[in-house]
Image 1 (cartoon, helix red, strand yellow):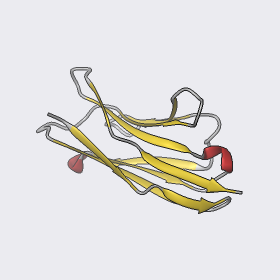
Image 2 (cartoon, helix red, strand yellow):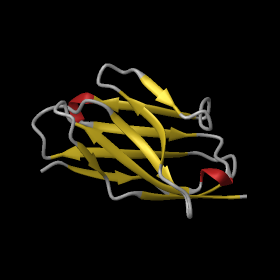
Image 3 (cartoon, one colour):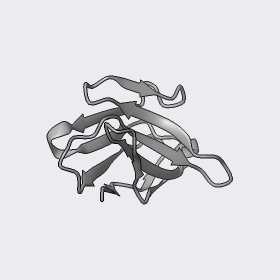
Image 4 (cartoon, one colour):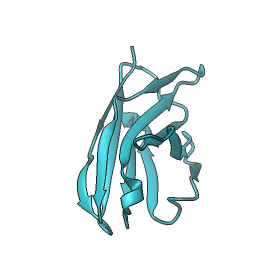
Length: 116
């Protein structure tokens, strides 16, 4: 059973930075696409950034130029470097990993709170 464990959330002032990490365990194979989503109170979960095993990235318009997604395939680990954080970035951030068979796994979420 694949498990995803996120870390790195917390409280930061506007303009600050945080780095989220997500490690996938329980799979002998590397993951296909890995991604970060977020869900703010009262809002639907939205995609933030994704990265394929080959390193192709995609970002939501709201985070382009501020967030950077990266991964270490050998460790099945994905990172999200978040700079110039804004109060509207406040949300629970979730990691998602998709296997090569198309099965999605989700982490438990990590809270990010950006104060103004």
